[in-house]
Image (cartoon, rainbow, N blue to C red; front, top):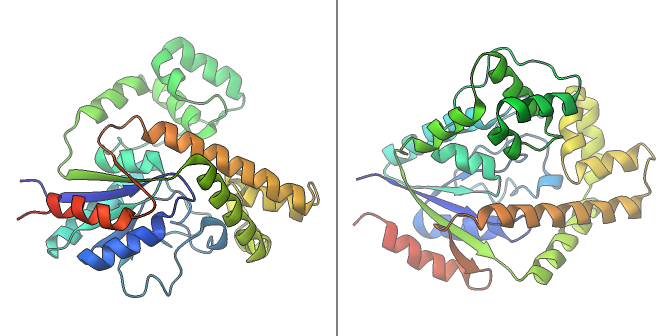
Length: 295
């Protein structure tokens, strides 16, 4: 019988952190982060990272795991997370994977192949994407025309004589060694957007500008990562006087709401996720988890 891995997911701003802490305390779970930015040290305010105080009594993993200028990808995450799952099971405990980064959640269940050793640098994204469209249209349909990392990886694979779409299919066909139990928190869209707006106001009031300035100065190679991250990108614009403070906050709110919408679109495709309203989520999830735990 496969050992269970519990996954708690949902869109940004829905309240995953507090629900996870309550579930972890109730079941003595260990939490594994599945957030694309919380894995980096010093990115605290802009990621709504659970505080050190909150993490004191419940083991957390893959939070503060790397410096902001270190490389992280789905292959790295899958390797680290699967090793942690096995370690937690060996301690006769169970992991609770918490986050909304779909590519990390997917990688944990179906680990991708290692990225190419030599990644080809792309000069023209449009020309590179056009090549992918010509040689592997299935992959082109999944890769956004502005996604430099995935375009570069796909071009590197095609140049090496491999089709990314075929590798993708092989990955999905691999059976996971774990039994995943998927739980999702949902909230009415107007309430979710209100929560997102409030959280962005709190981030800027709590020092997001100072945090962004400190990280860009201490880790200059992390600048591309900050430029792509919601909240940090707008903070950089404010710091460089490219955008006024009030306008920057509003742009960050809109970008975060759009991201939540994309997350929901992706998550809703998975029929295995047991969706529970935010109000009373802990009680209902406890019942679902108890049914899934080994006798």
